[in-house]
Image 1 (cartoon, each protein chain N blue to C red):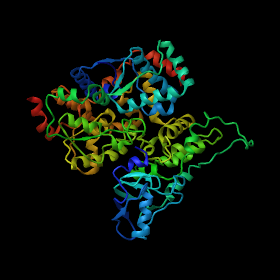
Image 2 (image 1 turned 30 degrees about the horizontal axis):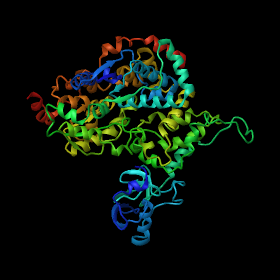
Image 3 (image 1 turned 180 degrees about the vertical axis):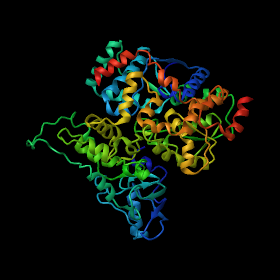
Image 4 (image 1 turned 45 degrees about the vertical axis):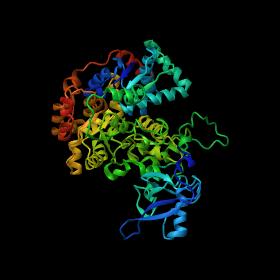
Length: 296
Length: 316
């Protein structure tokens, strides 16, 4: 299956391991990814808020590339996913904005028609690969590994976007854990906010928002946390030493990107998945439970 | 799933509802009382509370008035989620608690004063530069597309309770979503001519919103609070403030120059030298290869950057 692929800024800077493991896992899953080197940032929350028309144009430009090639656009970042989905909706409702955006894109030979499809990797796993095929591909089930899901906001909110009643009903990561052979733990942070979007200016908010939830995950026996979003990963991983200071609790919780977790189960090694590019190391529990499997 | 009968699946007339209610009287320790209430058809959380006060414990304190999602006085938390008691279906097992982020007066009744003082300080009324021209005023749907959504607010404070940043107390000066919706009713109205950036940036600290959409998730009036109120207000503040808010300003500049965000440059330029003080973190980031100083200093822009810069010129 051929897909257009949008890694986003984080996966090409602070979370290079996410980009690398997505490519490796996509290959194992039989996905052929077409990456657009000229794709920009989608505007995150900043351009989106303060320059709404520019936000529409930046996203429409990337969507138009996928339309041109007739490919579904696969994302690996929650915030980018929501931005694309919102722009599809906004330009669908505002023909005047659509024509202004297309005028601006014309110089590059691009035109956004409104047919683009966007899918986060998590949905590609569930909808395009499917449970049966994924079970077939699992080489080393993650037996005995207790995982807490950290969904992040923009893959589960705002309400009405994602086909379930509210964020409490989202079970996509827990179902995936089960398919990969791991256990899911329940804890307070499943659908909470990581605070990334104000952390460039003031990281205390992110540290205080997340620390208590990681502590709760630890108290519920989590060996690791999985997240489908590199922005959440950045907060949960790189600020974790600060959260330990703030909560006074020893955390040491490895934070795993979604494709890394799938990759481990498909037989890739932690080194291939570049899991050394995290601030928090793999941890004793994961080493004890996964590495022997991966080394088998 | 939002329909009452669907949420009542599993409940039949005569079944028992177990309601665990948080009780508090000033001067005493808070406690949870458990009540067993017989389910009646179409029963709402409010009906359960009325049954408790009429049949089991007349001492239970809670507010309600209209019973039909208009007055906004019966907001509380059911099983951890903010809702209106008059609108939420009774569930077989419920934990009913007062709103968060406001002082509890008794049981499920909170003191709304801190919230009301917060939004009154933002002057949530229209300041007209020109005198009222008489009815009808020439207004279009397009001009009112944001204010009209904010005007749906029933001031129930459910979002104020759900906001995780408000929940952090004094860590920020963020006003929370509900006061911003109140100011949005005026500031997003085209007839308002008041210079709002001071209210939005200094008083409400609007750029402390983390965009988590918790507020939208609990809003009983279904207001798209983040995308149709807070973001248009951020745009207004950014457009009118004499000194541009640092984070969005630097963000725009980096994307214009590079096409993509370089997180190191963003943090360094937003925080200044303060970003270099945490030596422990910098070392950890270097060891994990999370930062690449060479690339931050000399990295090339993305392919096709001239097209991107033209978009910036044409649109911004």
